[in-house]
Image 1: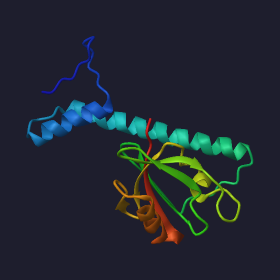
Image 2: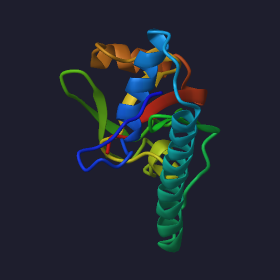
Image 3: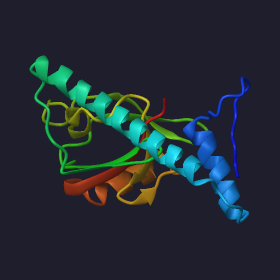
Length: 167
């Protein structure tokens, strides 16, 4: 049996740490307690629901301010605070990006060629400091601005981006 306790002796551990322990146990072919796996599943479901609620609250707030938001062509939420959005980027995406040592991040938003809000900002789902992981299915790690531009240009009408929400 695998029992995880914090300093005060209560059976508690955060989801990210717990997933590491379970992954390690599985790789070492050790048995993992079914109750622990259930707890992880329930915790992940709660976290995903909270993220969805946060995104819906932002959409509602913007709608109340007469914001003309638009639905993405495609949207899918994944574990680990990741989500895919596909938008029509023919007028541009309307985002500013920056780099850290390892990541490509949304650093801000700007108007697109027609003077309106960009399609990513208009969905209400992308926030400043979200990490861009993939563009049109290609990992962006280690790529420069020209390469990112080429990835976006490869399918402007259906530009698919995967983001990770950093807390």
